Image (cartoon, rainbow, N blue to C red; front, side, top):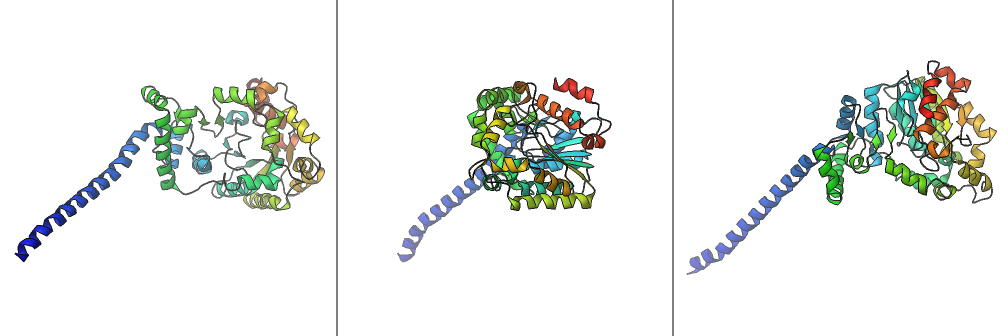
Length: 372
């Protein structure tokens, strides 16, 4: 009797055990199949590729326009491209120098490292990484006055810090980004499957933007049209640029370290502050004084700053006030140059003997045609 009761009581336990085992097995299978399925779905769009795979794909297909899904991976992607291209000249920058193309430096080999460094510390770190194994002959640094404002550092030290050596993290996050974006815009990706374009990567396909094989950035026509209508004004600069009493001595230190690295590695440096729209310059001049003014703008333009940089071995070309004949074609917005503007800046740089001496074989006539 007791034995019979034990047998009866064991049946629910066995059934429960089998049920739990089945559920766990099914969950494990689903947990395996779902990522595998997502991986396969994402492959045609470049969303299931590692950064080094994206770099290799663009090397083999130079017409591709590639964009990592998160800008914090831009530097890792571009360093992989740098290893493939072995340029003589590099330009390190935030987004400000993004439209400078290799054709402006022909016949010299050029790679644009823009969209990778938003603070002086990030600039020094990127330079170190970019020149550890490679030795470009010349490195051009975008040195903007706002890089030396403490508030700018507070804004971007963390949010724009580049991620290096995170292949698995990048891949898994890229797949999730693809799943979210494709769910919101299914027609975009369905159309891409029918007729693939040069754009590679989820965000590149979604926005029709990204990096060319020379590292320069392609803005979509819609982006340019919207930015020119909404952000080509002084108010944009007033809302974007930090106010500060002057330049931070602490934020100068990474530039000094960078200059020392350049000397030890035999690399010539140039510093460039690119132009702003005229209305923006007038605003910065008008509000440059006082504890809540644009003091970094005022102090950066001083002879003292120019002498400090030259003492480090960095001749500075401060082109912030450079007048552009046609601002509507020279700028994307208040502080980003369009390709025509980049060409006009390059012509101006070539008129400077120090700069021209490094690039005697560049033909300004070809640049003139590109910029007008």
